[in-house]
Image (tube, rainbow, N blue to C red; front, side, top):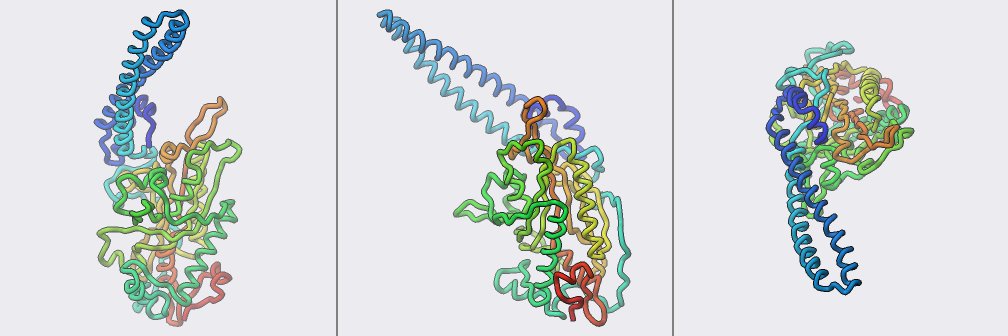
Length: 423
């Protein structure tokens, strides 16, 4: 969420740069500023009345002590009127603040200057491509056929017990899944991230803090009786660890990682592009999150991108990095790099990670701050990334490594799986 003072001081530039996200902010920013002017005026009137009420209270005491009861009673009547006016002003103030909040949450984060213009993912900028596309035989298979052939995943059983988008991993498929999770966590902790096991359900405040709420309820599973939400990503609980916190400068950077299942309704998803593991309602993911000083956050973003790239290289997966255009950039992100791996069985690129800098946008919602050298509180910057999402990594690994004699396991995973081939 953007700060009102920032909008006041940078109105025209904010309006212009938000056009990169295809968002017209001109009207809504004018409304916010007008409401904030009204809020300040109302607050000033309320403060003046409070000052007068305190003065009257002192005068009444003096008058009663001086046996001037009649004059004191006149002031008491004025005091009653002031209380009624103050109550009315406070009610108006609450309504104004609520109206401001409803408008502010509709304004997306400002994109970084490097974000290219564009309408959709077709306009994303490929900035790097690494590795060679596997050359497989004409008999190559997509992962859903391989999983059936080698008894790795039972999609029908998942559909039976829950529904489409909830696969059941089994045998060496389950072991490969577990191996990937352990490997990702080890890579992250070796890089200085502290591992956590957070809750899989969060409250409304947590959903608001990272930008899932309001307006994204339709993408989340909602436990209505308890008003809790199943997490769409570990980013939500991890980042909310630091809600309402003032970070000491010597604590930067704060680095967290966690494995969790993730739950997404993905309403309206269907067709060949979501077959098998390509898009699920429940999937496993290992996440990395950093809380950083603003001056260091973009250097940190580069480090996080290189970290994910190193994992993919160790897995021997061909990948490419894309800088998301304004039309594909999320509501809360200032800059995002997506990673895609090549799926040789499907002849297509599959997204496996997004690494983003949110600057102070989430922190303003979270009230996550630090004190600068002058003792003034400032917003921290938050960053997060997938390191990595499991389903499409799993799909690409089995597709790219299929042979006539089975599926080869990358060397870096063999100590985790304790087998080198699936056959």
